[in-house]
Structure formats: C-alpha cells, structure tokens
Image: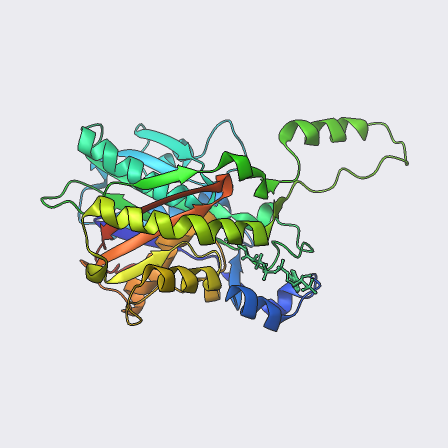
Amino acid sequence: MLGIGAYRPQRVVSNAEVCELLDSTPEWIFERTGINNRRWISGDETIRSIAAAAGERALKNTPIDPTLIGAVILCTSSWLKLTPHGAPSVASDLGLNGVAAFDLTSGCGGFGYGLGVAADLIRAGSADYVLVIGAETMTVGLDKSDRGTAMIFGDGAGAVVVGPAEENGISPTVWGSDGENAEAIAQNLDFQAFQTRAQELQGTDPAVEPVGQMSLRMEGPKVFRWAAVTLPRALSAALDASGVAKEDIEVFIPHQANARINELMKKNLGLADNIPMANDIENTGNTSAASIPLAMEEMLVTGKAKGGQLALLLGFGAGLSYAGQVVVLPPAPSETSF
Ligand code: COA
C-alpha cells in the first residue's frame, strides 16, 4: 500500500441525537457497541462524492503519477443502482476515465476482498497500480427507529493505492463466507418485492399498507456468535498464510463493527495488551466496507500507528463473509480527513 486517503462526512451525529428517534439510551449504545458518535452524509454529500473525495486524497498522498493507475475497485454495498455500477463514474471524477473499473460487494468484509483482488491483479500483471476505495452511505437505507441497526451504522470513505514493491507488503488473503446464515444481515425487501408492493399501491386502495422503507436488518446476537467462532480462526489463518509470527504484529485493525467484538478478538488471539488496536468506531460508527481504511487513516494521522509497521487486518459482515491479511502500513497521509 503506497498511499492512503479518507473522507469523513461533515455532520457528526451523537448517541443523544440517535435516541431522539430510537428507543434506546446513549449509555446503552456506548456500553454495547463502543460508539459515541458517527458521521452521516448531509447537504450535497453522496456515495459518489465521498468515494471520489477519499480516492482523490489517496492519489495526492501517493508519490506516483495518477495516470499509472490501471484499475479502480469500488468496495461498497451503498451504490444506489446496480446499473451502471459506481466505479466507472468515480474513476472518471478522479480524471481516470478509461481505466478498468468495477464494484465489489461483500458487505463489511468488502475492503479486505478488494485489497486481496488488487494485490493479485498486480502480482498477475493485470495492472501496475490499483486504487481500492471502500465507501458507504449506510444511512440511506437505515431505519432510524430500528433497535438492531440505527445506532450502529455511519457513512464514510477510505482508499489506498496498491502497487508493486521489492518486498511483499500484502500477504495472501484469507477469506471465506457462510451463505447458510446469510440472512442474519439482510435488506428487508429485495428489488422485486419492493416493486411488487409499489405496484400494489398504484391503486389508491386505502386498505393497502404503505410500501415502507427498503432497509437493512441485522440479527445482532447471531452475528456476534458467528463472529466469536469464525473470526479467531480467520485471524490465525491470516497469520499462518503471511508467515508472520503473532509476536511480530505491531498494529491490529479489525473491521469497526463493535468494540466489544474487537476486544474479544484481540484477547482470544493473544495479542499483547500494548499492541495498538483501531477504535475508530467510537467517533465514526460502523461504516461497513469503508471502516478499515478509515480506521487505518485515523491511526496513522494520530500517530497510534506508523507507516511501515506490520498490521493485521480483518473485515467481516454480510454474507456472512470475512477477509483478512497481514500488511505493511502505508506512510501517514499529509492530506487527511480531519
Ligand atoms: N437500545 C437499547 N436496548 C436494546 C437495543 C437498543 N438499541 N437493542 C436491544 N436492546 C435490549 C434488548 O431488548 C435486550 O433486552 P432484554 O435483556 O431486556 O431482553 C438487551 O438489550 C440485549 O439485547 P441484544 O440484542 O442481546 O443486544 P446485544 O448486546 O447483542 O447488542 C448489537 C446488540 C447489535 C450491538 C450486537 O449484537 C452486535 O454488535 N452484534 C454484532 C454486529 C456485527 O458484528 N455485525 C457484523 C458487521 S456489520
């Protein structure tokens, strides 16, 4: 990873504000999730604008000519259309019109998947440099009265430039999925069901219920249990695949889903107490596929981590899927999201 950039939406939303619509308390939210604040898009901020803003910063923070970028991977579950997908438009906003550009949807594990694909594209010779962007506007489909999701998710974007190196800086990706339990994190309606309900409403029959919102639902405790069993194994496998000893890991950057899950993972893996662990969730919330690059940027900007250190990454979420690597951290960015 040669450079990193991020974008945090302007609007900061506190637990107290979330509780204006949600039957909960700021204390409960912090205790169970580790979240105090999150960012929500406002004004003219969109998934496209925040993805491009993060990508632009990553390019500025990388000492290469941007025209060398051969592919743009947009990791997201928030792009509002399946057709056209988002990456070509974002690439064009970045002055990269014409490059290979595709979206990668793998829920909150999306950035880990994208980073793995980028490294493999470079190793295979399909591209010299790849821009990987994780961007989400989770609040667009958020039911702000739903106790299982409303307090958790936020918006944001982070991006890295991946390129060739003398020494391997991204280990083989350890990844997997559990489709048998995929419905544990799911939209409440698919597009067809939504359309059918909309058509039913075309008549003005007052007996027909309003179509409602297409929103995300999560069986939190079920996901928590899956995470407790699956993720420690995934972390050990990522260490084995990298050939790096646990004692040599200098920074731990798990997906920012829940601070309690992360504390448990760190403890169960046996990482030393003094190894810094990302805690961007406290003020950024869970930004799904954007959370790892956002957390990485926060650690580099604040000095909790340094460029060149060995970091263990693990993304996980919808699917239920996960992807992790051991990486060499990029240099601290000069253009930051703060
Ligand atoms: N505010 C206040 N109380 C709430 C609440 C809320 N938003 N949601 C649930 N509760 C209550 C429940 O009614 C229950 O009350 P009871 O004990 O009187 O029955 C109690 O709190 C515990 O509910 P539970 O659903 O077991 O909470 P939890 O501790 O599991 O926390 C999550 C909920 C969603 C924070 C947690 O399960 C989680 O983070 N899961 C994993 C998420 C994840 O990793 N996702 C993957 C990536 S997106």
